[in-house]
Length: 321
Length: 169
Image (cartoon, rainbow over all chains, first blue to last red; front, side, top):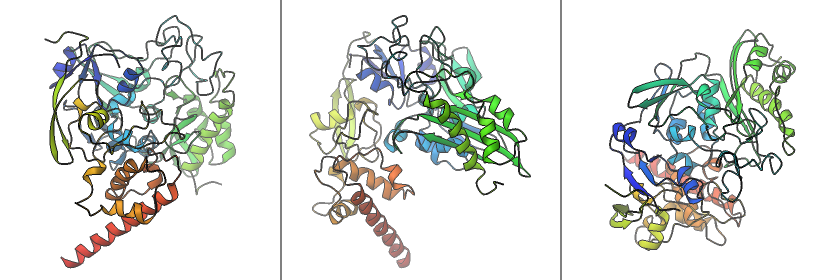
């Protein structure tokens, strides 16, 4: 690890005036510093900031420094969110990692994490070895000629499905942004991963109230049953009445997309659908439209639709025709 | 005003197994290294250099129950830390340690200190999915069935102790 200066922020104001890299749980930042992928000269420990608290009274509010394990265990958190959190990482990491940090985590692309390799995200213009290389773990949605790396957060997929917003604080005040618009697909500038500006800090995550979000789930398909990143994941919420789907929220991510990927086309196709596997498969079949599979991950177009179908079946278990 | 880029030692005080340990560390020193290299508390072991790069083929052990996963920098630790050395009372093993002996929940022993610390948390929090809760602790010898059995034994004993305490009130 390169030498760096460590300071503690006592107030949000301190943090906003600092040029240091924000350190919360450290589960991403310290890792990437050990690998020399990130070499900040100054690190600012923000754990003393009053960015705590979980409220579920009108929608949900999570302070950015709430730990993943605490949000997952909090009663009344929508099931898609708590399941996505419980299926992330391991208990030790969930005890440490913050919600704000989770949303800011960097890609797990092995080329990004290896400083001896080119990577457009790490060194703009240096090339992307994943496109012609080992790319089984890479994305098929939202990719570009410059980058095919996935966004690894589980909970961000659930949050995007449920129209969550991030509250960003700067010296100029706060602004609120749908999480879906916060992330940026790589395009020709993969080094720009999100809309966070210099001098801004994520202070809160807000999930608007959705009365039928109690009928929501998160399905994660992976090579190991636990402590593993997703090959594909889906967050689904359903409003079911009289044996038909009135409304739906569907997002996918994990190993299939460069950013948490909302699937409004699947949502539209689900409206009015009957609760049968055939109807679910029909609706999910549009999920992979526009996908660009690579040499090592063609299977993900099929896996993507099947993951959505599995989530739908899980949610409607016991009420199939 | 500190000079940017210079590694400036930070004066900290770690609460380790109930003892206060004042220490001056470089910012990049992890809690693990502070414990092992500086304080001689060697029960906690390294499984991998980075948080999520532990592969099943690697032996592993983690952390203390109240404290952080692997990458924690010593200078950012605020809470008291308990390591496996802090569990037993004199010669008397902690019930979870006892259960590990009873159920033969180890082979080579490298991962055992970390398994026990996670198991203590699993019992205390009465977790429903023990396998998921314990999945961050890998065991190359694959003593998993016996580890699960040890946690079951310790959980049952904790429940019985609670019932007995309730009955005497």
